[in-house]
Length: 340
Image (tube, rainbow, N blue to C red; front, side, top):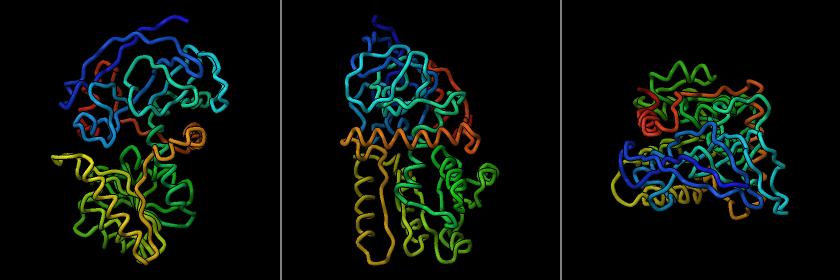
């Protein structure tokens, strides 16, 4: 097997989206248990927005190539490594991968065990919207909160990447959703099947209680900060708060770990209270040390999401499309809330 040239988009250090720069690199042939994948679609998540500020909790040292996930075509398959946890891959097969970094590249070499085959006919861009977002939404809904049909939940950021999939997956599971978003996103949130509430409401907790007087079974909160107290107050006895971000503190100066640690401390304190409610901080990478089990569970969860996407149960939310060479414009667009 021969080496391969690839274009990558590098983040050289803390800076504006325009600081991103292209670089060309020679990739080695895939080794045992690896595959060379030609990227068809990758995305911009909140993680990249934090990484360019140097505020993502465990980002690598600068410079590095961002890109949390991707969909692509297998071009070469390395020798089998005998590990037994990887899917059987073939050249020309479309796969998805959760990469954390490195996805903003024309081609990548990845461990075969981290690749998830896509259903036939599933569009690459549609599938890309449901990798990190879909895995996060599915696992929070079914593994963290363990929602049941007939319950009611609150989704903050209901029009966002994770939020819109949370609404759809909950609706599919027979769960009623109160979707919180900006007023201009009302139509989109209601189209997904949620009851809309404006995030700027004077007393959001009171508005939720009007709709669910006993409280809700779960709240999914990506905002963090002081507002997390309101999310806790929305819960019914036996309810679960799932916190999965700190968007409220993304521009605060200082150590980026402090807001996360403060949030974790608050959640631990709440869990110690004898009130029948629970609070969790969701980490998509939790359990990674048990590699084989983590890979198997992630593959199973993503395949469920992809199947629902392929049969039309889920609708992909694609705000815009940009070529890889316009990664800076894509990042700027995402940071503006998906609006030009």
